[in-house]
Image 1 (tube, rainbow, N blue to C red):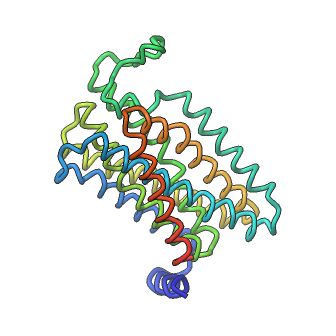
Image 2 (image 1 turned 30 degrees about the horizontal axis):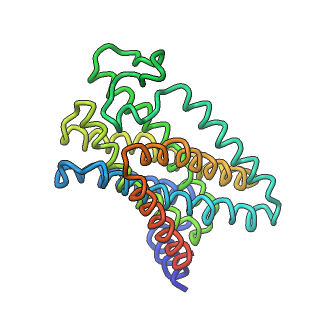
Length: 279
């Protein structure tokens, strides 16, 4: 099988230490995030239509991965068919993201280029007077929050010790990080950062957020094996929350919702192919 060959090559190169592999997975997805952010060097002015399609693709990959690489194996393999631990994890992931999301403004402030509150919510004025600084702060807060589940997901995947699950999951998160990195790069430009500065900044942000979370996820489930199904459910719930609460609404407000939907379907197809061919 393809998965056996890929897993054997990976294990031969990097060994079987789950925490080390989680670190490598975190480095991989962070690198692809930087790659996506750096696309603005060559694609200097992507259209809203293209960005919505790219974000839809990212949502599709995350949507399929949440079920094929986290929820289903969490129930069938790591809970012996008992769905309760995974569903508890899903619930906790959703609740944490919901509560955390209240602490920072939504990402649409940046994706739309707006630096003031929505007309419908005038009480949500930005807490900083300087518009450029406010945009940068919002960018850091919003994107940090919404990238946390990705690093955790990869770490949990490698922490399970099942490379057949972890590698497709790592590839899926990495692939969706490319359009996500491009989208948030454009958002940073709207906030007043130049392309070169943001490319460096995005790499730092990716390293600060996704790599430690991957390590934490791998270490936690390796140290306390009973946490694995809960952690897999938690990561899936957090990812599903981000898709529904942020990505889908953002891609359905500018008149290009059909492109975003087609992108989502393409992302689902790509992830399902990866899961079947590699896992």
